[in-house]
Length: 318
Image (tube, rainbow, N blue to C red; front, top):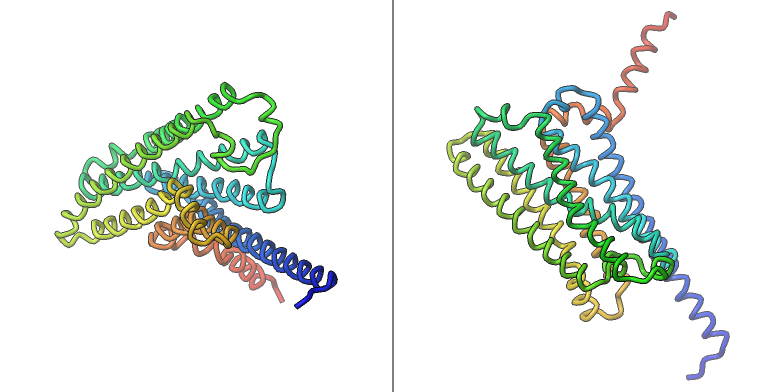
């Protein structure tokens, strides 16, 4: 069968249109998911700031820090996703400005979850010392420690880059990711070491707190059972976060198995690793915690504004 040039051009145009529609669809999906989750998270931050009862409780302070951290992580990750789709490559200097906050916030998440599990353990297993240990001041010190530990893991990559790469590299264009920017052997080895160290510490914390709370929960303590279920959710969330650390190997394996679906594989991995864990955070406290849920629903559904409007309307004389 012979094909005319017109037929070939038509086929190429159709394939290009399919590719364009797919790309737009994926970007719109990511942006819509990001906006939806960010709206929920922003409502939670607003709820936290509006009520003093949350600002003096270590549990809610750690939770809202996790939510705020997720908002930064979502914004930078989705920006990277869109840039790589739109431009494929960007300047290294611009890429660093996006990769650093994305990496820092990604590192923060498992550490934050570990401290939240520790807070649950203290509340259930040593309740008499809870108010002494989990003060507001110490909670903010813990948040500072989280950022310091993540910074010590990430910022050395910048100094290694400046020491090992020529200045021309900063003005070159690359496919933006952590491994393409911080590509030195030292950076890769340090990254793997820090990931292993962080995960071992986090998982040991989760296992220890879970089993200690499990023994207390056998006494039919409702708070202990709730704390046990919360730590299980933390474990699921950490499991999702762990996929960030095995992403390169997972990506290579899937591309080897399905060589024709590189774009689809990258989209699926990005959605699963970067977006899905951010969706779990609102469920843990925003929906499961009765006290927070009572205030949160008001702002999420905008019922406060509606009620005020109704009261104003009813008070207007006819």
